[in-house]
Image (cartoon, rainbow, N blue to C red; front, side, top):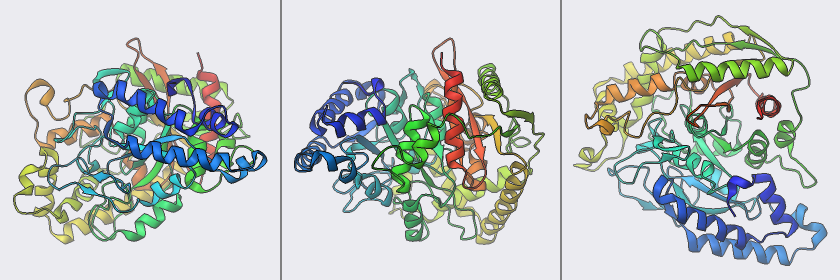
Length: 490
Protein backbone atom coordinates (compact mmCIF):
# COMPACT_ATOMS: atom_id res chain seq x y z
CA UNK A 1 0.00 0.00 0.00
CA UNK A 2 1.35 3.41 -0.96
CA UNK A 3 -0.26 6.47 0.53
CA UNK A 4 -0.20 8.48 -2.67
CA UNK A 5 -3.28 6.35 -3.40
CA UNK A 6 -4.89 7.26 -0.07
CA UNK A 7 -5.88 10.27 1.96
CA UNK A 8 -5.76 10.76 5.72
CA UNK A 9 -9.52 10.34 5.60
CA UNK A 10 -9.57 7.11 3.62
CA UNK A 11 -6.80 5.53 5.72
CA UNK A 12 -8.73 6.56 8.84
CA UNK A 13 -11.92 5.02 7.45
CA UNK A 14 -10.18 1.77 6.48
CA UNK A 15 -8.77 1.48 9.99
CA UNK A 16 -11.96 2.33 11.87
CA UNK A 17 -14.05 0.02 9.68
CA UNK A 18 -11.67 -2.88 10.20
CA UNK A 19 -10.75 -3.16 6.52
CA UNK A 20 -7.12 -2.69 7.57
CA UNK A 21 -5.39 -3.18 10.90
CA UNK A 22 -2.99 -0.68 12.43
CA UNK A 23 -0.18 -3.21 12.08
CA UNK A 24 -0.91 -3.67 8.37
CA UNK A 25 -0.91 0.07 7.73
CA UNK A 26 2.21 0.68 9.81
CA UNK A 27 4.13 -2.15 8.16
CA UNK A 28 3.13 -0.92 4.71
CA UNK A 29 4.21 2.63 5.53
CA UNK A 30 7.55 1.42 6.89
CA UNK A 31 8.08 -0.58 3.70
CA UNK A 32 7.58 2.55 1.60
CA UNK A 33 10.00 4.49 3.81
CA UNK A 34 12.61 1.73 3.40
CA UNK A 35 12.16 1.71 -0.37
CA UNK A 36 12.19 5.45 -1.03
CA UNK A 37 13.93 7.32 1.77
CA UNK A 38 17.49 6.60 0.64
CA UNK A 39 16.96 8.64 -2.53
CA UNK A 40 14.95 11.45 -0.90
CA UNK A 41 16.41 11.98 2.59
CA UNK A 42 13.02 12.65 4.14
CA UNK A 43 13.61 10.71 7.38
CA UNK A 44 16.60 11.10 9.70
CA UNK A 45 15.42 8.49 12.20
CA UNK A 46 12.98 5.62 11.67
CA UNK A 47 11.43 4.13 14.82
CA UNK A 48 10.23 0.90 13.23
CA UNK A 49 10.09 -1.29 16.34
CA UNK A 50 8.37 1.35 18.45
CA UNK A 51 5.88 2.04 15.66
CA UNK A 52 4.95 -1.63 15.38
CA UNK A 53 4.52 -1.90 19.16
CA UNK A 54 2.21 1.10 19.12
CA UNK A 55 0.25 -0.36 16.22
CA UNK A 56 -0.14 -3.69 18.01
CA UNK A 57 -1.48 -1.92 21.10
CA UNK A 58 -3.97 -0.04 18.92
CA UNK A 59 -5.14 -3.28 17.34
CA UNK A 60 -5.72 -4.77 20.78
CA UNK A 61 -7.73 -1.70 21.77
CA UNK A 62 -9.76 -2.05 18.56
CA UNK A 63 -10.50 -5.73 19.26
CA UNK A 64 -11.77 -5.11 22.79
CA UNK A 65 -13.99 -2.16 21.80
CA UNK A 66 -17.57 -2.94 20.83
CA UNK A 67 -18.17 -2.32 17.10
CA UNK A 68 -20.87 0.25 17.74
CA UNK A 69 -18.53 2.20 20.06
CA UNK A 70 -15.38 2.26 17.93
CA UNK A 71 -15.93 5.56 16.16
CA UNK A 72 -16.81 7.20 19.43
CA UNK A 73 -14.13 5.59 21.60
CA UNK A 74 -11.10 5.22 19.33
CA UNK A 75 -8.99 8.18 18.31
CA UNK A 76 -9.70 10.19 15.18
CA UNK A 77 -6.28 9.13 13.84
CA UNK A 78 -6.45 5.56 15.14
CA UNK A 79 -3.54 3.77 13.44
CA UNK A 80 -2.74 6.58 10.97
CA UNK A 81 1.04 6.87 10.48
CA UNK A 82 2.74 10.22 11.05
CA UNK A 83 6.28 11.54 11.56
CA UNK A 84 7.75 14.55 13.31
CA UNK A 85 10.26 17.11 12.13
CA UNK A 86 13.49 16.87 14.08
CA UNK A 87 12.91 20.08 16.02
CA UNK A 88 10.19 18.52 18.16
CA UNK A 89 10.73 16.03 20.97
CA UNK A 90 9.33 12.50 20.72
CA UNK A 91 9.92 10.42 23.84
CA UNK A 92 12.55 7.74 23.32
CA UNK A 93 13.82 9.32 20.09
CA UNK A 94 16.90 11.54 19.67
CA UNK A 95 16.39 15.22 18.86
CA UNK A 96 19.29 16.64 16.82
CA UNK A 97 17.77 19.89 15.47
CA UNK A 98 19.78 19.48 12.26
CA UNK A 99 23.00 20.67 13.90
CA UNK A 100 26.45 19.28 14.65
CA UNK A 101 27.00 22.00 17.25
CA UNK A 102 24.84 20.34 19.92
CA UNK A 103 24.84 16.72 21.00
CA UNK A 104 21.63 14.88 20.09
CA UNK A 105 19.60 14.10 23.19
CA UNK A 106 17.10 11.27 23.54
CA UNK A 107 13.85 12.93 24.55
CA UNK A 108 12.23 11.82 27.77
CA UNK A 109 8.86 13.39 26.95
CA UNK A 110 6.90 14.63 23.96
CA UNK A 111 6.47 18.14 22.66
CA UNK A 112 2.94 19.42 23.28
CA UNK A 113 1.76 19.01 19.68
CA UNK A 114 3.14 15.45 19.57
CA UNK A 115 1.14 14.56 22.68
CA UNK A 116 -2.00 16.06 21.13
CA UNK A 117 -1.75 14.06 17.90
CA UNK A 118 -0.63 10.82 19.55
CA UNK A 119 -3.59 11.05 21.94
CA UNK A 120 -5.82 10.57 18.88
CA UNK A 121 -4.15 7.26 17.99
CA UNK A 122 -1.53 8.31 15.44
CA UNK A 123 1.52 6.07 15.04
CA UNK A 124 4.88 7.84 14.88
CA UNK A 125 7.31 6.36 12.34
CA UNK A 126 10.20 8.62 13.35
CA UNK A 127 11.80 12.01 12.73
CA UNK A 128 12.16 13.97 9.49
CA UNK A 129 14.90 16.16 8.04
CA UNK A 130 15.18 19.84 8.95
CA UNK A 131 17.70 22.61 8.31
CA UNK A 132 19.96 23.61 11.17
CA UNK A 133 17.72 24.90 13.99
CA UNK A 134 14.89 25.25 11.43
CA UNK A 135 16.46 28.49 10.19
CA UNK A 136 16.11 28.16 6.42
CA UNK A 137 13.65 27.53 3.61
CA UNK A 138 15.56 24.44 2.46
CA UNK A 139 16.19 21.24 4.44
CA UNK A 140 19.93 20.70 4.19
CA UNK A 141 22.35 20.42 7.11
CA UNK A 142 25.80 19.10 7.99
CA UNK A 143 24.74 15.89 9.73
CA UNK A 144 22.33 14.15 7.35
CA UNK A 145 21.69 13.90 3.60
CA UNK A 146 19.52 16.72 2.22
CA UNK A 147 15.79 16.34 1.86
CA UNK A 148 14.93 16.17 -1.84
CA UNK A 149 11.78 16.94 -3.77
CA UNK A 150 9.83 13.84 -4.87
CA UNK A 151 8.66 15.74 -7.97
CA UNK A 152 12.33 16.06 -9.01
CA UNK A 153 14.98 14.77 -6.59
CA UNK A 154 17.56 17.21 -7.92
CA UNK A 155 15.51 20.02 -6.35
CA UNK A 156 14.86 21.14 -2.79
CA UNK A 157 11.76 20.00 -0.92
CA UNK A 158 11.70 23.33 0.91
CA UNK A 159 12.04 23.96 4.62
CA UNK A 160 12.02 23.83 7.43
CA UNK A 161 9.38 21.06 7.34
CA UNK A 162 11.02 19.81 4.14
CA UNK A 163 11.54 16.21 5.16
CA UNK A 164 7.95 15.99 6.35
CA UNK A 165 6.56 17.39 3.09
CA UNK A 166 8.78 15.09 1.05
CA UNK A 167 7.47 12.10 3.01
CA UNK A 168 3.88 13.01 2.14
CA UNK A 169 4.57 13.82 -1.51
CA UNK A 170 6.51 10.55 -1.94
CA UNK A 171 3.70 8.42 -0.52
CA UNK A 172 5.48 7.49 2.72
CA UNK A 173 2.75 9.13 4.80
CA UNK A 174 -0.80 10.36 4.09
CA UNK A 175 -0.22 13.64 5.95
CA UNK A 176 1.88 15.33 8.63
CA UNK A 177 1.87 18.17 11.11
CA UNK A 178 4.67 20.67 10.55
CA UNK A 179 5.63 23.96 12.12
CA UNK A 180 5.85 27.42 10.60
CA UNK A 181 7.77 30.43 11.97
CA UNK A 182 8.61 32.11 8.67
CA UNK A 183 6.97 29.86 6.10
CA UNK A 184 8.10 26.41 7.24
CA UNK A 185 4.78 24.70 6.52
CA UNK A 186 3.84 26.69 3.42
CA UNK A 187 7.22 26.65 1.64
CA UNK A 188 7.70 22.86 1.56
CA UNK A 189 4.01 22.27 0.91
CA UNK A 190 4.21 24.52 -2.13
CA UNK A 191 7.50 23.02 -3.32
CA UNK A 192 6.09 19.49 -3.14
CA UNK A 193 2.63 20.18 -4.59
CA UNK A 194 0.71 19.92 -1.31
CA UNK A 195 -1.70 21.94 0.82
CA UNK A 196 -0.20 23.68 3.84
CA UNK A 197 -2.14 25.59 6.50
CA UNK A 198 -0.47 28.10 8.83
CA UNK A 199 -2.97 28.89 11.58
CA UNK A 200 -3.05 32.22 13.33
CA UNK A 201 -0.62 32.57 16.20
CA UNK A 202 -1.92 31.09 19.45
CA UNK A 203 -4.91 29.39 17.83
CA UNK A 204 -3.67 25.81 18.36
CA UNK A 205 -3.94 24.86 22.05
CA UNK A 206 -0.68 22.87 22.01
CA UNK A 207 1.14 25.90 20.62
CA UNK A 208 -0.13 27.99 23.51
CA UNK A 209 1.16 25.39 25.97
CA UNK A 210 4.54 25.31 24.24
CA UNK A 211 4.79 29.10 24.23
CA UNK A 212 4.34 29.20 27.99
CA UNK A 213 7.39 26.93 28.31
CA UNK A 214 9.68 29.24 26.32
CA UNK A 215 12.46 30.90 28.27
CA UNK A 216 14.95 32.74 26.10
CA UNK A 217 16.41 30.55 23.39
CA UNK A 218 14.96 28.27 20.66
CA UNK A 219 12.54 25.95 22.41
CA UNK A 220 12.33 22.60 20.65
CA UNK A 221 8.89 22.02 22.11
CA UNK A 222 7.60 24.98 20.12
CA UNK A 223 9.03 23.32 17.03
CA UNK A 224 10.80 26.20 15.35
CA UNK A 225 13.34 28.93 15.83
CA UNK A 226 12.29 31.55 18.35
CA UNK A 227 13.59 35.08 18.77
CA UNK A 228 14.79 36.42 22.10
CA UNK A 229 13.40 39.94 22.16
CA UNK A 230 10.56 39.75 24.65
CA UNK A 231 8.65 42.47 22.81
CA UNK A 232 8.92 40.80 19.38
CA UNK A 233 5.94 39.24 17.59
CA UNK A 234 5.73 35.54 18.40
CA UNK A 235 6.19 33.56 15.20
CA UNK A 236 5.99 29.72 15.44
CA UNK A 237 2.75 27.81 14.89
CA UNK A 238 1.89 24.20 14.07
CA UNK A 239 0.01 23.36 10.89
CA UNK A 240 -0.95 20.43 8.65
CA UNK A 241 0.69 19.45 5.35
CA UNK A 242 -1.51 17.17 3.24
CA UNK A 243 -2.56 16.31 -0.29
CA UNK A 244 -5.85 18.19 -0.20
CA UNK A 245 -7.82 20.69 1.83
CA UNK A 246 -10.12 18.14 3.46
CA UNK A 247 -7.15 16.20 4.82
CA UNK A 248 -5.70 19.46 6.13
CA UNK A 249 -9.02 20.09 7.85
CA UNK A 250 -9.05 16.58 9.33
CA UNK A 251 -5.57 16.98 10.83
CA UNK A 252 -6.38 20.48 12.01
CA UNK A 253 -9.46 19.14 13.81
CA UNK A 254 -7.16 16.79 15.73
CA UNK A 255 -4.83 19.69 16.56
CA UNK A 256 -7.75 21.85 17.69
CA UNK A 257 -9.74 19.17 19.53
CA UNK A 258 -12.73 19.65 17.21
CA UNK A 259 -13.09 16.12 15.86
CA UNK A 260 -16.54 14.51 15.65
CA UNK A 261 -17.40 10.88 16.38
CA UNK A 262 -20.22 10.77 13.84
CA UNK A 263 -18.60 12.48 10.85
CA UNK A 264 -16.31 15.28 9.83
CA UNK A 265 -15.08 17.70 12.47
CA UNK A 266 -15.47 21.46 12.15
CA UNK A 267 -12.50 22.14 9.90
CA UNK A 268 -12.78 19.01 7.78
CA UNK A 269 -16.44 19.87 7.20
CA UNK A 270 -15.46 23.38 6.14
CA UNK A 271 -13.05 22.02 3.54
CA UNK A 272 -15.76 19.66 2.26
CA UNK A 273 -18.45 22.36 2.20
CA UNK A 274 -17.78 23.39 -1.42
CA UNK A 275 -17.26 27.01 -0.50
CA UNK A 276 -17.53 29.66 2.22
CA UNK A 277 -21.25 30.25 1.64
CA UNK A 278 -20.99 33.68 0.03
CA UNK A 279 -18.91 35.49 -2.57
CA UNK A 280 -15.74 36.90 -1.05
CA UNK A 281 -13.88 40.10 -1.77
CA UNK A 282 -10.34 39.05 -2.53
CA UNK A 283 -7.38 41.40 -2.83
CA UNK A 284 -4.70 40.34 -5.32
CA UNK A 285 -1.14 41.41 -4.58
CA UNK A 286 2.34 40.59 -5.80
CA UNK A 287 3.96 43.19 -3.54
CA UNK A 288 6.46 42.00 -0.93
CA UNK A 289 7.90 43.78 2.11
CA UNK A 290 11.35 42.61 0.97
CA UNK A 291 11.15 44.86 -2.11
CA UNK A 292 13.57 47.75 -1.86
CA UNK A 293 16.06 45.63 0.06
CA UNK A 294 16.23 42.70 -2.36
CA UNK A 295 15.18 42.35 -5.97
CA UNK A 296 11.89 40.45 -5.96
CA UNK A 297 10.60 39.14 -9.27
CA UNK A 298 8.13 36.45 -10.29
CA UNK A 299 9.03 33.66 -12.66
CA UNK A 300 6.79 32.82 -15.60
CA UNK A 301 5.58 29.75 -13.72
CA UNK A 302 4.73 31.74 -10.60
CA UNK A 303 2.67 34.22 -12.62
CA UNK A 304 0.88 31.41 -14.44
CA UNK A 305 0.03 29.74 -11.12
CA UNK A 306 -1.30 33.03 -9.77
CA UNK A 307 -3.39 33.54 -12.91
CA UNK A 308 -4.80 30.03 -12.53
CA UNK A 309 -5.80 30.84 -8.96
CA UNK A 310 -7.47 34.09 -10.02
CA UNK A 311 -9.40 32.28 -12.75
CA UNK A 312 -10.58 29.56 -10.38
CA UNK A 313 -11.67 32.10 -7.77
CA UNK A 314 -13.66 33.95 -10.41
CA UNK A 315 -15.29 30.74 -11.58
CA UNK A 316 -16.24 30.05 -7.96
CA UNK A 317 -18.08 33.37 -7.83
CA UNK A 318 -15.62 35.45 -5.83
CA UNK A 319 -14.63 39.02 -6.68
CA UNK A 320 -10.89 39.43 -7.20
CA UNK A 321 -9.40 42.91 -7.45
CA UNK A 322 -5.93 44.42 -7.44
CA UNK A 323 -5.17 45.36 -3.86
CA UNK A 324 -2.51 47.97 -4.60
CA UNK A 325 -0.66 47.13 -1.39
CA UNK A 326 2.57 48.89 -0.44
CA UNK A 327 4.68 47.81 2.48
CA UNK A 328 6.86 49.50 5.08
CA UNK A 329 10.48 49.62 3.87
CA UNK A 330 11.75 48.97 7.39
CA UNK A 331 10.50 45.38 7.33
CA UNK A 332 13.48 43.55 5.81
CA UNK A 333 16.10 44.86 8.24
CA UNK A 334 13.83 44.52 11.26
CA UNK A 335 12.87 40.97 10.37
CA UNK A 336 16.50 39.94 9.81
CA UNK A 337 17.52 41.39 13.17
CA UNK A 338 14.66 39.71 14.99
CA UNK A 339 14.94 36.37 13.16
CA UNK A 340 18.66 36.00 13.87
CA UNK A 341 18.71 37.34 17.42
CA UNK A 342 18.05 34.03 19.17
CA UNK A 343 21.37 32.53 18.11
CA UNK A 344 23.20 34.93 20.40
CA UNK A 345 21.83 32.87 23.30
CA UNK A 346 22.41 29.43 21.80
CA UNK A 347 23.88 27.21 24.56
CA UNK A 348 27.04 26.20 22.69
CA UNK A 349 29.97 24.52 24.41
CA UNK A 350 33.51 25.74 23.78
CA UNK A 351 34.50 24.98 20.20
CA UNK A 352 30.96 24.06 19.16
CA UNK A 353 30.50 27.27 17.17
CA UNK A 354 32.93 25.93 14.57
CA UNK A 355 30.55 23.04 13.97
CA UNK A 356 27.73 25.37 12.94
CA UNK A 357 26.85 25.65 9.29
CA UNK A 358 27.75 28.87 7.49
CA UNK A 359 24.26 30.37 7.74
CA UNK A 360 23.85 29.74 11.47
CA UNK A 361 27.43 30.83 12.20
CA UNK A 362 26.98 34.12 10.32
CA UNK A 363 23.58 34.68 11.96
CA UNK A 364 25.16 34.13 15.38
CA UNK A 365 28.06 36.49 14.63
CA UNK A 366 25.63 39.21 13.57
CA UNK A 367 23.47 38.68 16.64
CA UNK A 368 26.42 38.86 19.03
CA UNK A 369 27.46 42.24 17.62
CA UNK A 370 24.09 43.83 18.40
CA UNK A 371 23.08 45.52 21.58
CA UNK A 372 19.92 44.58 23.40
CA UNK A 373 18.59 48.02 22.55
CA UNK A 374 19.03 47.37 18.81
CA UNK A 375 17.20 44.06 19.02
CA UNK A 376 14.43 45.66 21.07
CA UNK A 377 14.09 48.50 18.55
CA UNK A 378 13.84 46.07 15.63
CA UNK A 379 11.13 44.14 17.44
CA UNK A 380 9.19 47.37 17.96
CA UNK A 381 9.45 48.08 14.23
CA UNK A 382 8.01 44.63 13.48
CA UNK A 383 5.13 45.22 15.86
CA UNK A 384 4.37 48.48 14.06
CA UNK A 385 4.69 46.84 10.64
CA UNK A 386 2.42 43.99 11.75
CA UNK A 387 -0.31 46.48 12.62
CA UNK A 388 0.03 47.88 9.11
CA UNK A 389 -0.24 44.41 7.58
CA UNK A 390 -3.42 43.64 9.49
CA UNK A 391 -5.00 46.98 8.63
CA UNK A 392 -4.20 46.73 4.91
CA UNK A 393 -5.21 43.10 4.53
CA UNK A 394 -8.30 43.63 6.66
CA UNK A 395 -9.90 45.56 3.79
CA UNK A 396 -10.50 42.18 2.14
CA UNK A 397 -11.98 38.85 3.14
CA UNK A 398 -8.87 37.16 1.74
CA UNK A 399 -5.61 38.42 0.27
CA UNK A 400 -4.21 36.38 -2.63
CA UNK A 401 -0.47 36.25 -3.33
CA UNK A 402 1.87 33.89 -5.14
CA UNK A 403 2.98 31.03 -2.91
CA UNK A 404 6.61 31.22 -4.06
CA UNK A 405 8.39 33.49 -6.52
CA UNK A 406 9.82 30.66 -8.64
CA UNK A 407 9.98 26.89 -8.99
CA UNK A 408 11.93 24.99 -6.32
CA UNK A 409 15.68 25.55 -6.78
CA UNK A 410 18.24 22.75 -6.93
CA UNK A 411 19.68 21.21 -3.79
CA UNK A 412 22.76 23.28 -2.94
CA UNK A 413 21.43 26.45 -4.60
CA UNK A 414 21.14 28.52 -1.43
CA UNK A 415 24.41 27.38 0.13
CA UNK A 416 26.34 27.55 -3.14
CA UNK A 417 27.56 24.01 -2.58
CA UNK A 418 25.66 22.85 -5.62
CA UNK A 419 28.11 24.57 -7.96
CA UNK A 420 31.14 24.32 -5.68
CA UNK A 421 31.23 28.01 -4.75
CA UNK A 422 30.04 28.22 -1.12
CA UNK A 423 27.99 31.28 -0.27
CA UNK A 424 28.33 33.36 2.85
CA UNK A 425 25.31 33.67 5.13
CA UNK A 426 24.22 37.00 3.65
CA UNK A 427 24.02 35.59 0.12
CA UNK A 428 22.23 32.47 1.33
CA UNK A 429 19.68 34.58 3.21
CA UNK A 430 19.12 36.94 0.26
CA UNK A 431 18.40 34.01 -2.06
CA UNK A 432 15.93 32.62 0.48
CA UNK A 433 14.08 35.94 0.70
CA UNK A 434 13.90 36.13 -3.09
CA UNK A 435 12.45 32.61 -3.32
CA UNK A 436 9.97 33.10 -0.43
CA UNK A 437 9.07 36.82 -0.40
CA UNK A 438 5.46 36.30 0.76
CA UNK A 439 5.63 33.99 3.77
CA UNK A 440 7.37 35.57 6.77
CA UNK A 441 5.16 38.66 6.64
CA UNK A 442 2.17 36.49 7.56
CA UNK A 443 3.96 35.10 10.61
CA UNK A 444 4.75 38.64 11.71
CA UNK A 445 1.08 39.59 11.26
CA UNK A 446 0.09 36.49 13.29
CA UNK A 447 -2.79 35.87 10.84
CA UNK A 448 -3.67 32.55 9.18
CA UNK A 449 -2.65 31.60 5.64
CA UNK A 450 -2.91 28.60 3.36
CA UNK A 451 -1.05 27.51 0.24
CA UNK A 452 -2.42 25.17 -2.38
CA UNK A 453 -1.22 24.03 -5.80
CA UNK A 454 -2.85 25.59 -8.86
CA UNK A 455 -0.51 24.55 -11.69
CA UNK A 456 1.76 21.76 -12.88
CA UNK A 457 4.59 22.97 -15.09
CA UNK A 458 5.74 21.23 -18.23
CA UNK A 459 8.54 19.70 -16.15
CA UNK A 460 6.04 18.22 -13.69
CA UNK A 461 6.75 20.70 -10.89
CA UNK A 462 4.02 22.26 -8.78
CA UNK A 463 3.31 25.96 -8.33
CA UNK A 464 0.55 27.55 -6.32
CA UNK A 465 -0.95 30.48 -4.48
CA UNK A 466 -1.25 31.73 -0.92
CA UNK A 467 -4.52 32.76 0.70
CA UNK A 468 -4.16 35.11 3.70
CA UNK A 469 -7.18 35.39 5.97
CA UNK A 470 -8.43 37.51 8.82
CA UNK A 471 -7.93 36.48 12.43
CA UNK A 472 -9.90 33.32 13.17
CA UNK A 473 -10.62 32.53 9.51
CA UNK A 474 -8.92 29.13 9.29
CA UNK A 475 -12.23 27.41 8.47
CA UNK A 476 -12.96 29.94 5.74
CA UNK A 477 -9.53 29.44 4.18
CA UNK A 478 -10.08 25.67 4.14
CA UNK A 479 -13.52 26.17 2.59
CA UNK A 480 -12.09 28.35 -0.18
CA UNK A 481 -9.25 25.89 -0.79
CA UNK A 482 -11.66 22.97 -1.00
CA UNK A 483 -13.81 24.94 -3.41
CA UNK A 484 -10.85 25.86 -5.61
CA UNK A 485 -9.75 22.24 -5.83
CA UNK A 486 -12.98 21.50 -7.70
CA UNK A 487 -12.23 24.14 -10.32
CA UNK A 488 -8.54 23.29 -10.57
CA UNK A 489 -9.03 19.53 -10.94
CA UNK A 490 -7.81 18.27 -14.34
